Every structure is written in structure tokens, then in C-alpha cells.
Length: 333
Image 1 (cartoon, rainbow, N blue to C red):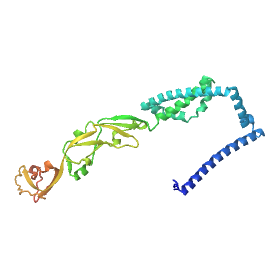
Image 2: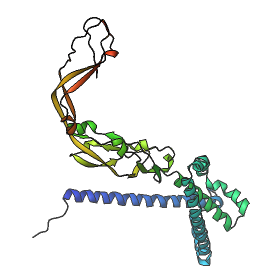
Image 3: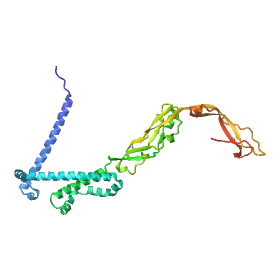
Image 4: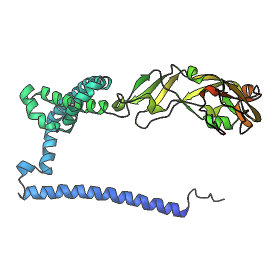
């Protein structure tokens, strides 16, 4: 039985086309390189360009063979490699120390930031003549140049890298309370004192180093969400936070959660309202028995409290009234 091909004819044709494109690209790149060297050689051999200044491929190849056969090429290559390694390792160590110092000391980083920016923008090779004057034209100049380039790059990149963060601790954090209306719609209410439970909260945030000094606890919206309550009795609510695109995220909150007492949130209707009169009626005035409108009200709240209510009372203090003739309507809350 003939085995079925894993790919369709259309896929095979597409892959052949892509391989052809790749082969054509490589061939054209090699062709351009060969033409470049041929044109260069022709221009130099016909003295159209000065071979002393621009050299030529044939002279370069002859020099390469001569240096290789004499051993000079490998000796110089080894010396250059050694100088590069020494300069790189020294610069890495020095640059890392400087970068960490700038990272830890924010005021120092802000002071030196414009100078680091200028050094990063400055062509390092332009300092070559100055370095040769300072330390001479030997190995020392090469190593110093490598150190200068690497230190500047390391210090600039690490001290200004937004991906590097520092821990910042916030104490006595103001915790927001959300989800109150949703909690009541779900039939629950918190009866314990939340302000006592939410006192003394501490948060630790991983703040991008560039924003360290400006970061405030309010940027992370540390909160307790009452809409997550799903039953009565003692409930354990986890403190939550939001991640800021500018100021990073909170890594830890202490305490991680708070305990609250929860009861059913209920309504009772047709609670009668009575009036209690205090004070004395001034001489020469008469006051009829007060009446209330509406005579019945609805109350809501924790089940234990609402069930204990038998009536609502209105207190009328006659000494605080402004006495006028006729019917007086008094409003209250």
C-alpha cells in the first residue's frame, strides 16, 4: 500500500519556492561581494585609485600569507585578544559596581544622568588621541579605551534600565473598601469595625528604578473587596492590589487578609412610627397632638439589629421649635 504524503502538493510547491528564494538571495549576496572585490582590484591595478591609500585585494592576500607564514599574524592576534579580554573583564567589573551604586542611590543617579547621557552619545574612538597622550601608545591605551567604552555603556544601561526594579516599603497604607453595594445586593453586611481591621497595613512593591522616588502606595489601589463575601459569620478577606504600568506591582502585603463579621442584610417594611414630645409649650400657645407622615417606614440592616426593631420613634423638642400660628410641618432625617 502506497504511503500517503505528509504534506500536500501545494505545500510542497510552496516549500520549493521558498528554498529557491533563499538560494537566489545567497547567490546574489556572494555575486555582489565577488563583483566588489573584482572592481576594487581592477581600479587599483589600473591606477584609477591610489593602491597605497586604498590598497587592493591582491595586496591584502599577499600580506595575509606573509604574516601567516612568518607567525606575526598569530602573535598580533593573540596580543589583541588578550588586551580585549583584559579590557572587557575589567570594564565589566568596574561598570557593574558603578551601575549598582547609581541604582541604589537615586539622588546620585539624577545628578550624574546628564553626564552619562553625554558620554554614551560621544564617539568613544574620538577619545583615542587623548588616551594615547595620557597613557602612551602601547597596550595600556588599548585596555583603557576598552574599559572606558564598556564602563560607560554598562553604567548607562543598567542605571537607566526600566526592567530593573527596587523594593519599596509603604507603611500605614490607606486601604480602599470596594464592593459595598454588591455585597448588600447579595444579602450580606459587615457588622465589625473595618477601620480597626485595616489599620497598620504594610505593602512592599517592586518599583522600576526610574520611578522609585515618585512611587506612592495610592498607585497600587490596595483594597478589600466586600463583593467577595459569600456567607455569614467570620469571613477572611484577602487584601488586593493593582499592577501599575508605570510604578510596577505589589510583591507582598501584610497582613495578607482581614477577618470580618458578616450578617444577613435584610429589609423590614411597615414599621410604625411614634412621636415623643419633649420640652414645654410656651405660655399663650396651644399645640395639638403631632402626627407623622408616613405613619409606617421600612428599615434595612443586619438581621440581628433589624429584627430587634419594633417601632421607629420621632423626637420633637418644643423648645427648639419656631412658634407660629397655624399648622407647622417639621421635617427630619
